[in-house]
Structures are given as C-alpha cells and as structure tokens.
Length: 578
Image (cartoon, rainbow, N blue to C red; front, top):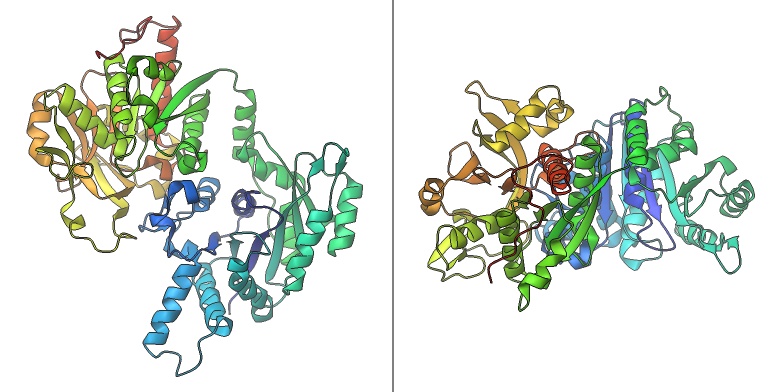
C-alpha cells in the first residue's frame, strides 16, 4: 500500500518569488522531523532538459551524479537537505511529450486518440510516483506561474492526485506575493486573492498560502487573506525577505509552517532539531570582516548563471568565519586596447575565479585574467573552462607555445593543448551528450590538492558525508568523486613538457588518462579543476576547494594589508607587460 504523502507547491502573481527556496526549506524542516523525503521539479518548457539553453535565458544548469542536466532549483534542494538527486527529480514538458509521442509511434496506446488528458497527465503522474517510490513525503514544485498556458497539463495532473491518493495524502501549498504600495502605505492582498481564484478555477484549492512580503504580515492582513482564499488563518504564512536564504527554514518554522503541514497530512513527527541551521544563521549575522572574490566570466549579466558558485563561496566564507563578497566581471571587459587600465577592475579582489562556459566569446579576457593572477600570485581557482584556460595561458607564456589553444576555439591550432575527447567526436545531438555526472579522481600525495582534501579527513564534516565520495586510499592517495559537464580535455601529448617545467597534475582519472586537477608549483594557491565542485557544496558541508580558496584569499588579503607577513603578496600589484 502506497503510504507516501504528496506536497505540491505552486506559485502565483509573478515569477522569481522563491518557490525553489520555499520547497527546499520545507524539505529542511521535514527532514529535521525525521521524514525520508525527496523533492521534484516540474518545468513547463518544451526543452527535454535545460542543457542546450542559453544561461541568460535559464540561468545555471545544475548537474546530478547520474549525469542529468537539470533546473538550478535542484541545487537548492541539495544544499538545503541531505538529498543526492537524480534525473527522476526534474521533469519537463519536453520530456513528457517526447515519451508520449514515442509510445504512440510504437503503438502502445492500442489505437486510441492520444490527448493531454489522460495520456500526458498520466505520464506526469507516473513520473511523480516513480520519484516518490519508498519515500515518506515527496515535495513537488511546479515551475512557472499559475495562469501560464504552458503549465496547465502539470496543474491538471496534480489536481487529479487528490482524487487518486485521497485528501489526507495530498497537500497543496501556494506561494504568492503581498506587495507593499509605498504611496498608499498599505499591504495589498488583491493579487493573492486573484491568484488563488485562478488556481481554484482549475480545481486546485490550496490549504496553505505562503505570502512573500518585505515585512511580517499583521494578523488582520492574514485574516483577510484567509477569508477571501478559504483557508485557516493559521495557514497563511509570511515569507518575509531575509538577509540570507539560509534564514528561510528558521523563519518558516517560526511561522508554524511545518506544524501545519503535518497537521493537514495527518502524520506524527518528532520536534525538529534545527541547531545546525541556527548556528549557520547566527554565524552569518555575526560576520564582521569581508573579502572580495572576483568572478570573471561570460554570463555575469545574469547572476543566476553562477548560482551554485555564488552559494559555494558563501559556504567557504562560513567555514572561514568571513563574509565573501562577489564581484562579477564580464571577461570581454579585459579585451582590446588599454588593457593595463582595464585590469584595474581586478584591484580589491583577494581571489580570482574563472568559471565554466562554452564558445569563443570573452576567452581572451579570461586568458588575460589568468595571466594577471599568475604573475601577481593572487589565489586563483579555475573551474572547467577556467582550468583549461589556465593550461593554455601557461603554455603560451611559460612554455613559449604562443599559438597554444583549445580545439574548441580553433580546430586548426598547431598546439591543441586542450583537445576534444575521443568519445565526443562526431556527436550528432548536442543535448545530453557531454561527459556528464560524477566520475572518480585520484589525488597524488604532496600536492596542494591533497592538502586541501586531506585536512578534511581529520574530522571535517564534508568528508563524513557519504554522498561526497571522498576516501583515503591504502597507498596514501585520496579518491574523490566529482561532477562533470564538458566535451574537451587536457591533451596528454603536452603532459611531459608541462611537468618538466614544474607544472603539477595533482588529480587524474583512475586510469591516469584524464587530467582532473592541475596546480602551479611553488605558488601559494593556484588550482584548476575539470569538474564542478560547486555542485557538491552546501552550508552544512562546504566543499574543500571553496574552503581552501577562501582561506587563501583571506591570507592574501591580510598580507596585502600588512596584517601578516607573506612572501607572495606585494604592496603594489604588478601589471602585464604590454
């Protein structure tokens, strides 16, 4: 007998209200009460997955261990809970329609006319139940806003769930906006009333309404919303703007949201232990000092493009008791004339990060950034593309291979330091065909990478979390498991020349063929990694690379400002030789 409980979260009035954070926070509260949960995102777009979308359109593509390219909200789900999600946790309209059309072509519908109801809705319900298998509670977030034509099949499918599973097993939560009109000096409930009316018109009656607002809702406003939206006053929950998203679970707990959920689902639960989240919240509130990390990328005009990176730097800051401010810099700003003047944009940055990306645009600016960081010995972290550019810059300016390049940018380059992977050649379909998901890496002893991960082996919480896959081997090396998303790799034909100059390949695949981590010898902190460590960091389990990167940035800042002695930080930074 299926005893799983289902919570469906919809959004109204406007987009970007924070359904993902709300769903994640509910997951936090229910896990703290001892429930075995999972969270699923239903996205109404026709793309099979977001992997081929422009980051300016969709934001970050989050990658799971099993290689699914998913919505960025899955990153929130993993950061707020103990979950390690899979491809089952993100469902798109494109994936649903693709499956139904293929089934129709194979004759699986016995000659019936294939329609949205029941065939599309049945496929949606089937995927929800597959994700919920064996769980106490499944939280399902429906993307988009109530009233969007694209999300109607998903809304119809979840409407049917209460009929299929019974009213005690299904709960609808609606997230809406209660704006404060400054000129009138009033909070306005009408947008919420209209949004709920739209939801009820298609047969879904929410039991709980979460109201996003810039202040705590007074009781008379809650009573008004309850009356016009047909819910209990205690089920109108304020979701006030918080200084940090990591305060949201505690704020919703104070509003009594988790108590209402277990009441309506008719389940018993222990009192939640949120002490770790309280520690995080208190730490964030008491941080006095700050450093600035510069992220030099090509998608900086939309910060959601680097959502996991931004959060991972915050996690690294929490582990080092420092507030991390992020300065986003468009790499194209570091191209063209007056380069020395333009690079002054990096002044004030105690660490420089070049993230992943695709295509030629902005590459020269990133290469100038790598060189600037290298000659000034500023802590540097290159992720995926940032690691590849580290090797190209080194080949050009240290090894003297001035025409070194990546096959991605120039297929006829005589020195393809970065080459296309063998299994990526002659790929027809672009979607879902990269090297995706978790792959193992072995880290050599006596390297910076080893020290970064090994110090966590001595009681640091990250390594005690099984989903991170870090272990100390009998030969003294360290094995890790990290998530990937790329088509290109370091060309091993150049490996001997790099190593002869003092360049260190500190992390490789178990067969030794794929470079995973590289670093510069005798540099305080200069690392590139082919994988994406940001996809496995959370406030409770900060990733070692971000903990180490922020620690190095703090040390650099202190030395630069005369707060401690250092041989690598100077009173004045060098500029490139133009």
